[in-house]
Structure formats: C-alpha cells, structure tokens
Image (tube, rainbow over all chains, first blue to last red; front, side):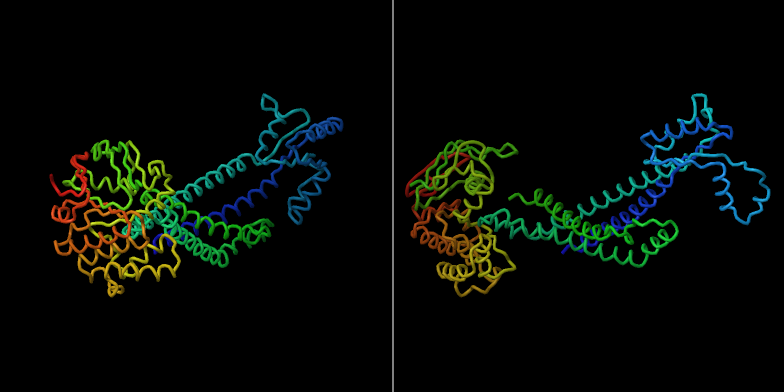
Length: 282
Length: 228
C-alpha cells in the first residue's frame, strides 16, 4: 500500500490544520482589536453648546457610526486622574488643560480613515469647533495588509501541498494499476463491468487519503493539547478574547478535525479517479 | 441465423494504417471459421473489432443481431460475456491456481459462489485437466495452459468463441489436441472463429476458410484449405 502517499497526506493535512487554527485565532484577535478602534474628536475649549449638539447629531446620522459618546472636560480630567493615580504629574496640573471630546465607535474598523477625514476641510485644517482628530490610522492599515498577505501565503502553501499530495496518490494508483495490468486485462476480456474494475483502485485512493487525514487529526490533536492551547490560554488571560479555535465554545476545532478527514478522503478519490481516467481505459 | 455480420467495415488506425478495407462477412450460428493470411493481413484487427477493444472507422458490425458499433461503453461488458477469447499467450494469472484462474472469470462478472464451485470442475473435465485444478500455470505445459485458457473462455458458456493464433506457440501434436477440443466445443453449438497462419491445421480440418490479405478478403471457401 502507498506508505509515501499516506505519509504525505498526513503531513499536508496536519500543516493545513495548524494553519487553520492559527489563522482562526489571528482573525479572532483582529476582530476584537477592530472592535476597539475608536476615533477621538477633541473639541476646542470655546466651542458653543449649540455647535456641540449639532455635531453630535450629525455624527450619529453617519451609517458607519456604531455609537458616539460625549466626554466633557470634567469627565476627561476624572479619567486622567484615575489612570495616573499616585503619579507626580497630577501635582503639576493646574486647572483643567484637558479638552472635551467625542469618542466614536465604528461598525467597520476599515472605514476609520474615511470617517476621520470628514473632520478636516480641504486645506487640511480641522472644521469649526474641532481641535484635533486622533485615530490609529497607520497601524490599523498595516495590520490589515499584513494579515491579508499572511492569509494569502498560507492559502498558497496549502494549495501547493494538496497538489503535491494528489500527484503522489495519482502515482501510487498508477503503479498499482501497472502491477495488476494482467488481471485488469483478463477482467475486461471476460466482461467485468467498468465499475467492478475501477472499484478497488478508487477504494485504495480513498483509503490512503482517509488514513492520512486520520493521522493528521491525531497529530493536530496532540499539538493542540500540548502547545497551541497554551498560546490560547495566554490570549484569553491578557486580551479577554473568547472566540478561539480550541478554547472557544463554537466547536470550530471539531469541525476542523472532521473536515480534515473528509478532505483526505476526497483528495484520495479525486486523484485515483484522475489516474484511472488516464491509465485504465475501460 | 447470422451470429456475426460485418457490413462495409473499414478500420484505419491513428497512425494511418488501413487494417481492414470495406469488409463484408457473414458467419452463421454454429459455424467453424478459419481466418487465414499472413501477419498484418487484418486478422487480429478483426478479433479486436468484434470485442470492441477498438472502434470501427466506418461500417457496421452485428453480433447476435445487435449493432455493436452504437453500443454504449457501459454495455461493452455484456457483449464480451457473449464472446469467449483465446490467445496465443494464454493470459493466465501466474499467482493463482488453475481453479482460481477460471473462477476469476466468473467472479468478476458477479457469479455466486455455488455456481463457480459447480461450473469450474465441469469445464476442467471438458478440457481434460480436472486433476491439475490446484496446480499453478507455470507447472503446466504450453498445451495444458492453452486448454486452461479455453476452459476460462468457455466456462461462462458463451455462444461465440474467438481464438487468435491459439496454436502459435505449440508443437503440431499438441496443436492437434487443441483443435480436437475446439471441434468438440463447436459441436455443442458454439460458433468458433479462429485466426491462424498454420497451414497444416487448416488443411486437416476442412472447414470454412476466409483468407485475408492487406485488409481485404481475397477468398471465402466452404471446406477449404490454406492457400488455393
């Protein structure tokens, strides 16, 4: 039986599994960072109440905006005091130098720049009543482009590995067709049906893929149990992100295990099917 | 009743070789026909076309009244179950016993075990090799192997037996015994078509002779001899 083919399926699908867990977790972390993306609009001290209310109502109407909160000068100072409790800096402060602000949360973090730019006129100056607009523009953009590239590379590697696996199974089946060519010849001559002639080879391909998938799942399970789960525990403790591959409640890891075995079987059947079409004209 | 009929059949291979040119031939049920002619005259092509191992280029072939040229590929196994084939190189499986070799032909067309157990010994008695049931092909002589090949072709009782140079590897005495066996099978009512270029066999049998040369039938004679 095709030992090489089984091993290759196992390694390939194992790598696919590891990538999936990591990609899923990175996606989870990103989503939660996305949720934390805010635009802070600092207002000028002399802004009138009318203008403040007008701005707040306008911003609320924007479709990208999830929520908006007004932080007054006093609230800002309170927050600052809480964050810097015990620090010398508090003694230096006289009066209230902190501005009032709107904290805007967005439905889609990728629109942050687009929304922030509305507070700036065409000369690059802030609009009336607004002093400064702050948002994490460059790091958000980088983060998204890096994960997009990493995802594409991972996908490419997976596709290449799956193709390599298919070629190996294809070759195993080709060899076993060759080894049994006399038997096949006799079968065809005495009138065995095409299905009867093909079935053992299809089964062999399926078995190799299925077994390889099974081994991959066992390896992945061990890796998760002893290594990846530790990483996820750290993420949960520090970032409070719940929806992870192994620790999460969504059973995503069980679906992945199941999927890997199914994919293994499919790879096997497909590649032996190709080999049969090419080498077994019945 | 016409069991085999070729109507204007031509076969041109992909490399351009015209193996058969407008062949018309009728073989009746129960006939014994020799196809004779030198190598490359189209005898083997004739055999291959009948079991649809290769398609015709033009024309029509009828086997047992059915046009096999329009046969779907899923129906080809059915056609081959009606035609037993015998070859110069026997095509026996060397890792199986004689019993298993013949049983194999029944197994792969889905016959149940009890039929296999009844029919294999029966056909082995017919070819006179019942005692060699548990031997392997390499333990048998060439003539014995050919008789096993005949047994395998005949075990399913097909109405037609096609033999492509069945005595090509055998000495004259052994060939004679193979011919006797084929005659007996023919007497039971089986149509036998045999391609050969062995003069002595054809002359001794005095059966219908169809002579081919360069893809054409140049002679069709009842109770003929090799060469006119």
